[in-house]
Length: 496
Image (cartoon, rainbow, N blue to C red; front, side, top):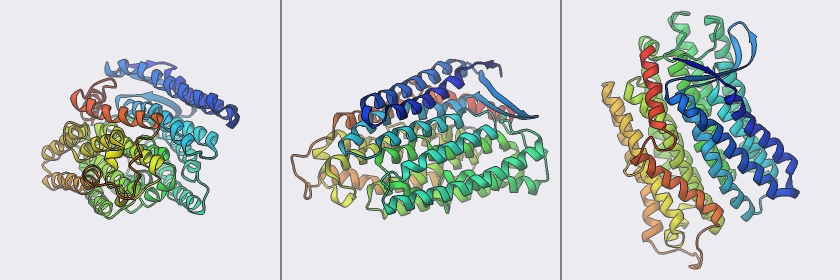
């Protein structure tokens, strides 16, 4: 694979970092300027990343080295097809969430808005840095930037419950980070390298049991951010944060970074051949299958809309890891494209929850009967997201789940095919009553004069919902997610 050396990855990173600094300088007294910097930084970042996409689609990689620390260890960016999928998702949805945040935060007259927008910019800085990392050390650095920068967002309301949720968030994720740091140190000790290689690079280094231990510690570490049960409880607790933060946690940055890192370890540190030889892929597959089913069963019991969406996210994150663990071509491809497709669908659902709260201050599903008649754009978009996560056309979730099911058949693992199908049925069981109640039941205790939330809130919702349909009709539209997943899968299996 041809390597192109370019400063573009660094410039993409500096866009959000400079945006964060300018947001601080603008402050509360110049909120129009502060929000201008937010939008400008998000657009510039996305534009720079998009400019690199043609090279990636041509089968090339882009590298930029910041500093050589010691033999085999660099702070380095390397843009490949898999990393570009996550980078484009995070930067693209940052634009939508930034616009939404302006309407949401202003309408609710939230405090500490400068801190909010600053931390948001730093979180995207960390997420995209992780996506573009060439090795485990660079990945770990940006992984921790993402963790620390999102703590003030989780605890934004500064109530006792919010502070408690923020502390729980740090406790889980920093404990996971300790496991990751141990794993990185052991990897370097065994191999003398930390660089990602499609198909893996740790094979032939160390005993089989030691490699199994290494894989387990990696999965515990990164699995904490991916909210794999039983290390998931921080995620539902974090729903106390403002809704745009929930969207950031679930669709754009935090948990997606955890899943992205798990797939990096599975496919670029160990690789399909080694995991198959060690037999540990099957243990991982059963483990995350438990999370898939249990998360959906718990979601059925939740009356708070954001908590139900939180457990739906936990389910989908483990579906992505399960696809990668099956090690077949279609399953790997399905898991990769489910990262961006789930991102668009899930952020639509969370932004809808925020729109409902802005207009009605309602959070309980049992209080939302008839709300679709009063907020048709919001609940119409919610219906699109719900259909997609259930795997029903014409929403892009059908495509990723179709490939995951094909991958299970390709791997001759019908038990995991049943996991995907049962998960889809449970998705329908807890999403469809919301949709039915909102459109076909009479409004319960709501003023019939209620209508849609402010334009800055509604427009991003409709846009992400429309893109969720566009990616079904044209899977390679605009961002070429499907083609990039195909390139990455071919590269992994060609070498691994």
